[in-house]
Picture: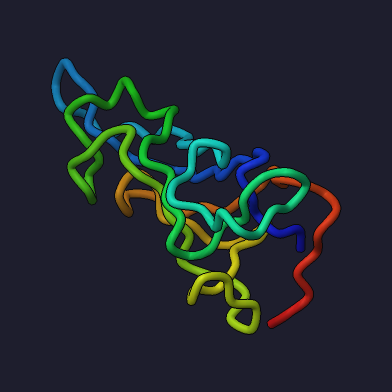
Length: 129
């Protein structure tokens, strides 16, 4: 799969169930996280001109669940952070496994599970277990 980098890419999680006014009703939303907003990234490894991502990289704010202002049923947050929980354990960047397209993510502070569905770049492929 293609390695993740700061060039772009999108993580998508669905359903992200949040409590929505006027009566706090549980409604499912699709949550997305933009890869080009991620921090911190691996500054000394560039993939197609953008710093690489590892499992320490976090997207501080997601989008798509804004109407659920009462918060996620599992996390109590709305539009919160996204991070990858799987990576290529045999490719290490700055002490942590590199992440790639289809790596599993926890979004809205763990309220929803998703994965990278849009690649950051299409040149560098990570072929490891």
